[in-house]
Length: 311
Image (tube, rainbow, N blue to C red):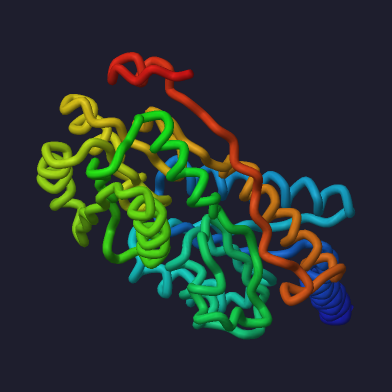
């Protein structure tokens, strides 16, 4: 009798364990409303940080409104050649969508997958980035602003005339910056203003390069260059001490003026696109590359310090 009782107890325990196992296996099915998104951000600086936060906030809100949830894995590569490593972790995990913040991250994502939807942000020119052939699984938002309006803003506010020299400072490793350099060079030179490129590949070169530039130019133009933006306090300090005004395409405290977009809103627009894709409403091929309307900003304190009189 004792043996029978023991056998019955063992059987009951085995049935209980089986029941628990079945419960654990069914748990993932209950999380079918949760998506997984990988965010690859090139590096840390204010503009890219804002774009990533805007993306996260908007995507989370849009999915919550639809009764869904999302797990967002945000990784900062630190430098361009590490973007591929980050993206490969996302493809291995088979995430539902990749958001690539900055051009090197976008290129890494597009090269890694043709199946997973990829959205870019803080990217200036998608057509140029992909040689005129944007992959079907890629779309996103652009931080491009009208170069002609930026050039005119500098000419008018600084009273630039024929023969004046404008230095364009950018990292030679960033293709977006070269696009912007060529655009503003053409516009300035049409007015007889001389344009000189000051390029670097390593941040250790930036201080000496900026010091030399500040001694040779009347004004400085900085495109939406991530490497400069990450170190723009160096540029701002040197140029302000030399009495040389700095104009940036991305805004920031170092510029006396800017015609730029709100990077948080840029990221938020990208987040809304992501929600449409994850909810099955659109594919990346259905979504046009979006831009934002830029706003004019002047740094009154810096203008006064540099002796720039605003109309």
